[in-house]
Picture 1 (tube, one colour):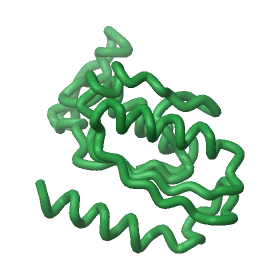
Picture 2: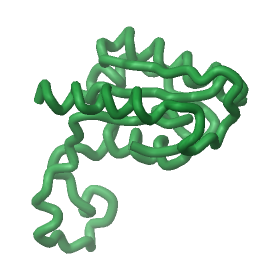
Picture 3: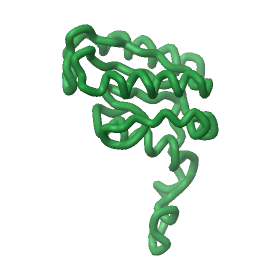
Picture 4: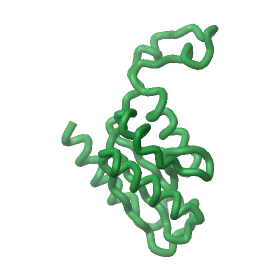
Length: 134
């Protein structure tokens, strides 16, 4: 789960560095330790005014999404967020790739709403249902 850039970073990890990948994927001099034995796989992803992609630009790469074994993903964003179109295009591409997606659109909320807007209960219920299935 992540908010804004933190969600984008979470998405980058899920797209490119899941499983038991360790720091040697980025730096040959990295020395793995026992924490590197813990899988980086996730059962769910929360994108709170965030999306898969890079800063300010959502990914719409259906093929990449389909190949990445992404977990079910929850989006919460406001209608006054300047990235509304980015969220919606990313969600559409994820759905085309077969990734389960849930969205909560908060009327009148801007980017950076934090814990405001009443989204937490919906996210909690969704996350509980994901973990109950697993």
